[in-house]
Image (tube, rainbow, N blue to C red):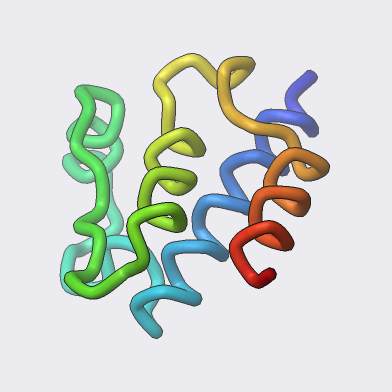
Length: 84
């Protein structure tokens, strides 16, 4: 179960880094305060100009409930659809 949660978090981080060229929260110190902010709903900024479908997919990936997040197969299929 923990492995599945970590995989879903990694996917979101990859998507954010691909769209922005930087890791999530690049300008902030990665410490306890940032962890608490994330736990309270703070999310990375979606870079202006990010395609709407891709941005919506990222928002789905950071759902507070990990099991509501899309699986790797769903992400793959949606990204393939975007590229067609």
